[in-house]
Image (tube, rainbow, N blue to C red; front, top):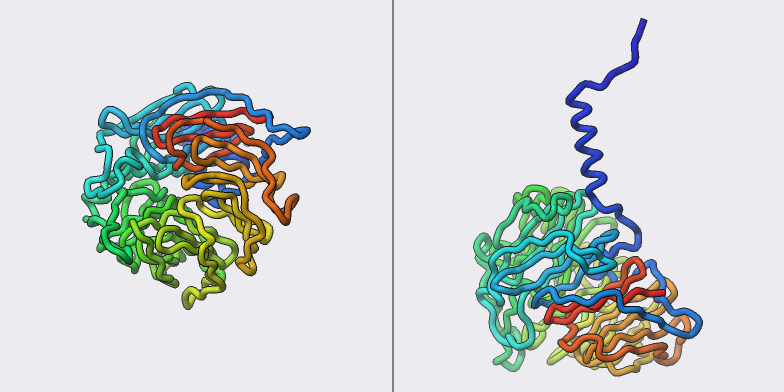
Length: 438
């Protein structure tokens, strides 16, 4: 006669451990903002703007300073993660997204600027790169301005899993002069958010050993280095792109748009490079990706917006629009249009590059996101927060629905974030304001 099957003790232990980790990782949701520029790294979200009955009724939920830095916050379930520099240390904060109250905090010693920094130190300081959250494991990755790459366990109050310093390991040098007129050499340290793809953490290292490096996301072991050896740019993040069925990653380096393969056996191989240099090393806006097309842009001596078709044989220019450009804000591609906020809010036809409309007064620092109800949330200079229609409702002219001024006093380099009906605005001094949407 057979009795009931009884699991052995090791099996019970493993089951208990798995249940613990499942409970410890905040329940991920579709409207999380776990990475640079949101879930798909494109500035488009699945939430509404909060525009109701002709009004945008924002209620301030909390306000708090986290320390210097232009890093943007990320949100996973009921938790917000952000960084800041103060008292000679980089701090990583995990706080309640609804109240701003601490859940846990960790820190490590760090200079205010990168070790080879050069120029414009009145414009930036502290952590610039946005954290990356891996929803499969609960691991959190941060990159400091001085090259400190850390992996933290969000399930264990920020326990450090592994660490390395990119300058020490890969001997990245100070960025060279690439401007046309000379005297515009700049180095702002490490600025680009890491990217998790599968079991790999991809980082823009910008060293003679590799422009990009892939690491085992759990151990930090180096897996591959890119064929390209060029210097890092100053963009906010790497962007996944699929080219003819091949998984790749795109990044705007100091000198080029670089597209690199990620498929097994070809990791790090270059499929496309397209020359793009800017005075002051200001290749800053993150490339925008739609299917196998990439849109890049910059200001200063290279004021232009450019659409490229990417194939496994390289990059082909589709169009370029001189004088239409973004100096900081990363563009959004949606429903046949390109949007960005830099000095004004722009809408351009994706197929032709022709201007549909422009308007508003944003200033040179700005960012935007696009909501499910077809509206743009814009965060701009002077602490202006505004809501505008997209071309879906206003195809021929810029239409501003609402504006709130003087939200924060310092420069709004960090990109605006919307998650779980809460809007987060941060300035370079590290103050975050959270607004509850209706």
